[in-house]
Length: 286
Image (tube, rainbow, N blue to C red; front, top):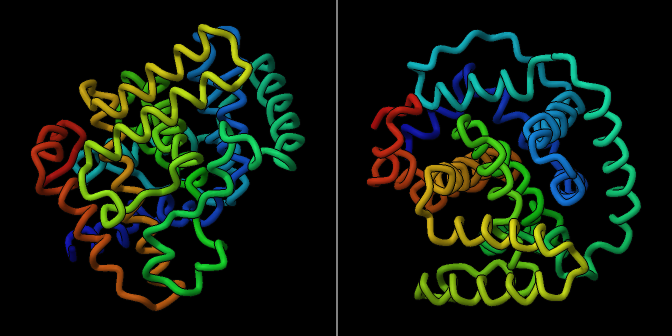
């Protein structure tokens, strides 16, 4: 969809587009560790913002371009700058906690892929491998990388429920550690895909050593993603497609391939669907 391609190459969007290359599996584990071990839920807003801010800072991307919310996806870009790009002061308690969680995440990385709860770090995004032969050695984007990016986009699209949307992004594909990244060709009935993933996630939570309240919180977040009934879930669905478009743009430039089917799939939600129109308040124009 040419309209979407043109949008992603504008100067207003370039910082987010460029950031796509710098996210790794550790970022998803780090954010999940923070979510699981933060004892004060009121701190999660700043915790998630700090994690995203650190990843952006690591990329070296500079945010110095004023953006109007009238620009398509203006709220996403403005919130992105405000949440992750601006160098603001973080409470020392937040910084110390996050750095401790990062240290624990680094230690976990060595054996995380053998535990289904963390297993999406070893699950490649199947759609890209299907059309790009160079990625069949599993060197491409993982489900964990996609999930972290989607969490950041979802949180920015839903500033009034930033934490809920961010957590949904982290967990929305976590069941794929068990069922795999099922493509539409493999599971023709979308309802069957949802059933498989819900069953897998329930069993995953039953077999991981987490406090009951944490397991319940994760399950409610995952279930909300599947039902899509909340505003945060709507934003997650949109964020998922935004990441698809950004990754398509990245891979087209890197491998000189035509990924029109992915642009079409993303554009159908972003611009043309009932859902896209429902989010007109986010500064998007059809």
